[in-house]
Image 1: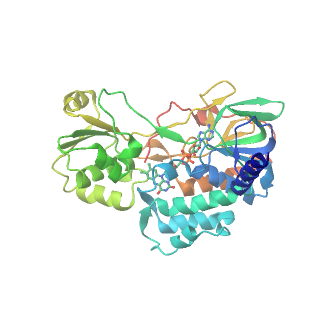
Image 2: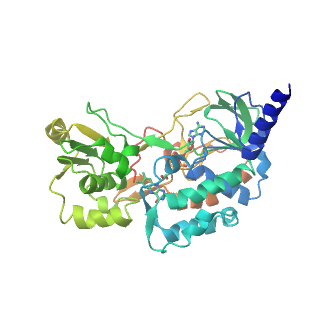
Image 3: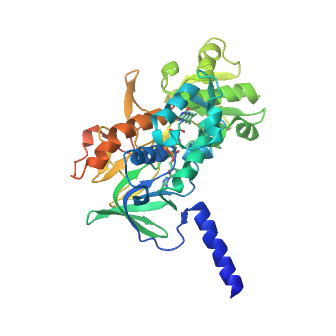
Length: 380
Ligand SMILES: Cc1cc2nc3c(=O)[nH]c(=O)nc-3n(C[C@H](O)[C@H](O)[C@H](O)COP(=O)(O)OP(=O)(O)OC[C@H]3O[C@@H](n4cnc5c(N)ncnc54)[C@H](O)[C@@H]3O)c2cc1C
């Protein structure tokens, strides 16, 4: 009996310390707001909501890991494409973050303003902020499978139960797109870390790399600098990679000064046409797809094909989208491209969250402005 009491006390204390609800039993709470996703976009939306005066205890924040999404899980070691001064701007523009103590945040001030750093320099402070925010709002470690709107509430369903919220922000992120060539694949997330990439390749390899934006260029750089492979064949669609969104820092320098002026002798770049694929792909024994990202699936009122109005952020009545899953777009070289990154999400949240708070009437999403998940979203 005493042992059971002791174990229960330890369990209670552990949950209090971490203050994260592990959804192992049916959930039945009702909230004013739910934010699904704790990546860069989710934490930014949450900070802006709190800044706007929303009572923290009325916000449920749901994520299976609370580890800054893909950036925290896979991209810590890759070179960021914004200078330190932009990272500091992000922190300053978010008053909620400014006041949170974090040694990692303080470390950011020691870097030169114009330098580009690996992404862990921003991931680590964001992890500290996540811990802090999890003690303010109601964090729920879980994955939402579907949402349904009934009687002025969204019901958010997981395998553990349902929670209800009046308004929901989806910050659910995206996963790398693939093509279906019958060649062993090196996953994009692994290829973006040069030490992990090196474990996949050997000197006899001929590697196909699909894509022409930041991620693809970074992988070409890694393959030619650190992995002595026999041959690299890059299939691209748009040759104007210098203007590629997000192509900055060392990677941009390498594109302009090495790839353009003095390309590695084992690297061939070709337009991704049927003829070129038929000619060059049979030579390749491994492939990397760096061709963009696709919205993580979630079912809303019975469908996964979500319309989204990027001007208002509205997906449905009291349902809003932010982040790489629901990005604003811009025009580069005449092409519509998705805009992503900390500052973009913050600017977007600061513009739209006050409207979402004020909005109680249903506004139809404007389909012609919207994107859906099958649409091509070029990526950095
Ligand atoms: C090479 C490269 C360089 C980059 N450089 C930069 C840079 O310098 N600066 C910058 O700002 N950005 C950079 N980025 C972009 C950055 O990584 C993305 O913008 C960012 O990861 C997207 O954040 P997100 O929150 O929208 O999505 P994600 O990071 O994917 O996070 C989504 C979160 O939602 C959770 N989730 C998903 N579905 C559910 C569900 N159903 N229920 C509960 N939780 C769910 C996931 O577990 C995850 O935690 C770079 C990206 C690449 C590839």
